[in-house]
Length: 227
Length: 343
Picture 1 (cartoon, helix red, strand yellow):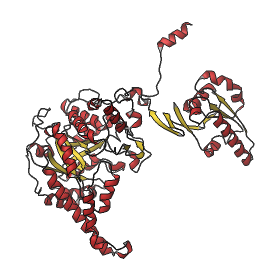
Picture 2 (picture 1 turned 60 degrees about the horizontal axis):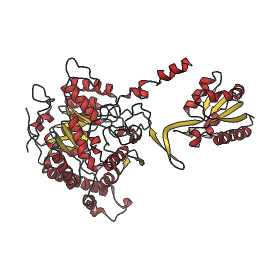
Picture 3 (picture 1 turned 90 degrees about the vertical axis):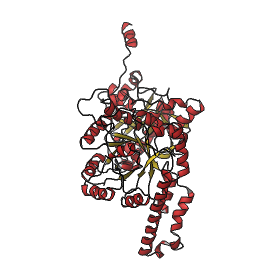
């Protein structure tokens, strides 16, 4: 899922400083699960901003509302009326949610309340880790289900660099060496021979390097048109 | 010792990959010596000229580092061109961190045109170590893919995309690095095998202080027959102080410093021991530092002599970081001076 972190209250205050009527919009999907932008966080953010506004004496009107998914048009229709009267929408969705609101409400100024950080998983309560770089050409079949693109600091494809030590990456003792993990896993499964093949340069066109990406499924599209 | 037979790979009409002095030295079975020259963090070419003067005649080629430890320095190709003017053969180091495949290939065309004939392909330290930790990294290719790319430019006269190259191809004697003691240790000989398979002609290793551990690594390398396909230069370097030995032991991935060696360096400080920092005069400190350095050089000489006995070691790579003066003493002390002349 998408993992995000809330921006500091200071930054949030700056982002909405020019507005009198602020609508905080939470999202009920990924960012709810990672405790960054769900209904609970939306309520806390709006109450914090209200308090700050009172201290500041500028009497902002701050309301909050959480939709099931900010990244789908149909869920955004229900906030149309609230959006219409807001000077600014503070989205607690991921970067996709923020942009969906901007795209759906062209006349509305929308600002991000979160920093969208990565695609990952919760490892334990309060700890999340990156797992996928959405490179568009999955290599997990070669690496025992451990991604070197997302999890090796250098996205190497042919094994560990010289900076791997005692299982951790050269950048930090808190960062696992992805290639040590891959090595151990392939070793335990009797598949080390996979590491002896030279992996050719990656085609980064399917990644962000090829420009903004888009998928068109003609099968689905045509079916929709025929209805 | 006999030179590895690597003639099955494509070569030019001279029977060489590049015809560099380093290549000839190794082909003719001489025990090769390479050194390292770190470019300055400024645009002063005289720094290169001065360092070149210290190294000239004492090594067969000199590695020019490429933004080592991710700190901005004069480019390895620029500094390498200056080294050539000074009569010193460069090994251009290139890391994957700062360039994508376009920049790598174009810079290599330029480097060859400027006279560079040796290339060392490296992954590169992560930029978090250096002075621009906020930079974006590249790592379009890894070092093994880079070796493959540059040998294909040379042997197949093809760019990485597969397009044929018209006109002069860049002909480098292509090297790669290996860190024999980095994790996972069991994989290291196989990683070396991948570099050989990709086309590496020579290998320079990470610093070796633990000879028995390196001998074990080399045993595996021989078992895989790699010593007959690639020239292996063992990495050595003089320790400046017990502090440096301790730092390398504890902080640098892939460097093993035996306790015994650490103690040997510490013991050198015995005459000054028991005194606190403020009790030591400037002269005391200077004398102690000199004693440490002398011992460090002696250790390095002994390491070279021991490494030379290991089958499959074709030479040494002396990394005297910001201490180029030491190379002369080490090479002379190890009985490797004067350097043989090759045609």
